[in-house]
Length: 63
Image 1 (spheres, rainbow, N blue to C red):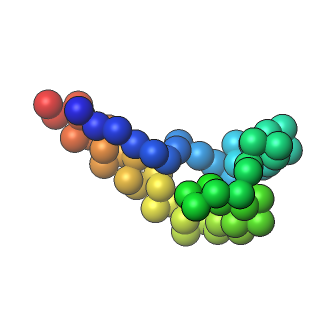
Image 2 (cartoon, one colour):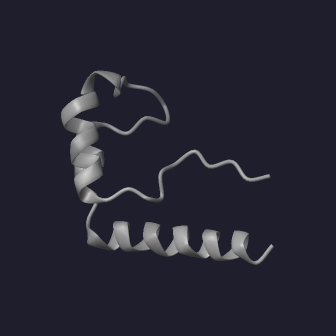
């Protein structure tokens, strides 16, 4: 069983949409990123998430 507490499928567009439409849900908490932190992610961050996502999917497909 695998449980993820993140969204490896995120893109700059989906993160911008979350900030635009769900900002009220971004309540300060230990593991909740601020709007500024979410929007500050660069292309390298998204590329790393995509690499991790496909590595995970490849592992699941091999089972």
